[in-house]
Length: 124
Image (cartoon, rainbow, N blue to C red; front, side):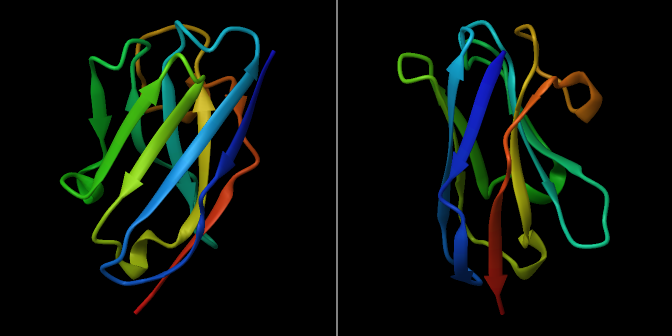
């Protein structure tokens, strides 16, 4: 079992920045691909970005490319999401998730561990 706890959400004005963190505990964090997903009110959960087990490969949804950066520190069992140039449409609950193995995926059903989510609100 892997427990994931997100932090760093909050209220920010459009154009601002936030850094989300996801701390993992329990079974080994290393060797697992990690992803960030988000869900806005009335919408389905959507893929934001993912990183493979080593950090050598990443993938982003088109709407955040060039603005968001995913990274991980395996020594600290933590994955990060740096969000810059935030827009009101980025407002959502952001979830951290882990796969059972190392290749990244954009599909929510392929992630078996999920955090409780952290709210990000971007005002215009």
